[in-house]
View 1 (cartoon, helix red, strand yellow):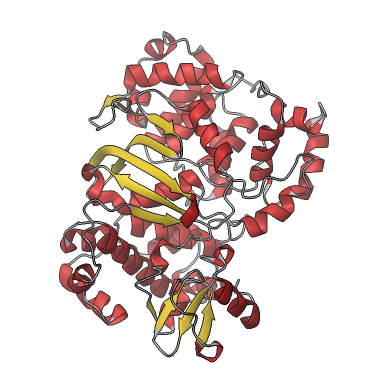
View 2: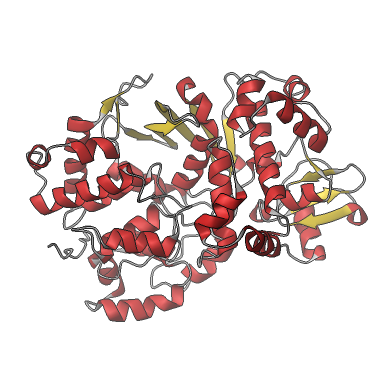
Length: 490
């Protein structure tokens, strides 16, 4: 929601990064819209119009600033923890655009169980623009980022942004931005072959606990955390269904409130999807101005800018959560490490410590149960892993933020060996649900000074709709050694 015009203009004058991604300024004298952190001279108040999103600004015929680059601004990942139909539709559109896929609004409407007309109506009411306008903006902004920060051929940029032909891409880009793609690339002022992809976030950002979380769980061969740098391997499916493998390096640049991302050349056709997955992994779209006032009610000291460790791959996160039942972080990492050594696929990287991909769902589903059991994984857990893998491999279970929350939670709960604690942890990290609450978690009960999950749940009502963030802070503030409560196993 855009603040009132006077407050919005004060944010512009102060270049207030807390409003980045929440506020965009259209300047009538130039026809350009900017982020509030733009370093150019502030426009006069009477020349400013204020918008809640790039799509709204572009619907009003403004084009994006080439200096502050609205395409790298943080998004609004948790606009509403209730996951309204309009928010879910936006997530589905974002996922398809960044995956370079065609977007059919009737298909999205059918998936949400509403008519195409109803989807357009509720989307317009929630986002201030029609779904097609939102879709067009998302495609062009992704293309603008790839043109600016990479050396991908223009044809490949067009395909990665979801355009079926170069001619249609060039026409749409020139019509909306009054600039053809090749000219934008020439006017960048520098080559992009070695330039990182830039991803902005809203400060504050409590970086140390997030990197510590990843470092304590890092798998040899798959992940590395060194200082402010996180590296890992990953695979992603191209729009043609090809499985592309490679690596990423995410480097935090706190003085700019940015993450600078490098990716393997092999991932070039899926860079849009990689960008989105890194944003989710590092929770770059969180809004501390909304979350921190709620976390201030916790019985532990407030650390401004708490972030929720996300997921680079929903299946991987779910597997690691299942193997984390009843054991310490170190023991869970040992079990997962054995799974990677047995079923992980080798991959070439320039880093000696990155050698394998995490096993895919199809590989786990097809494995002999006895072979998994010989890794030290108990029979009930093997059954849970393979049931989960079979559902994901068959496409019946989708573990990402675009998935319908109630149906996905119900499907997870129905799997053998997966109880409420596991479901809530998967929802928190893989589905990016900001209000998950693993009520039986012993670390939480310890931090809250109780042994009664019901009492803890009543206390946690005060932290809605950000209980997932409360979980992270309570874990950080608890004594070492928390254990999850044992899951009911058939």
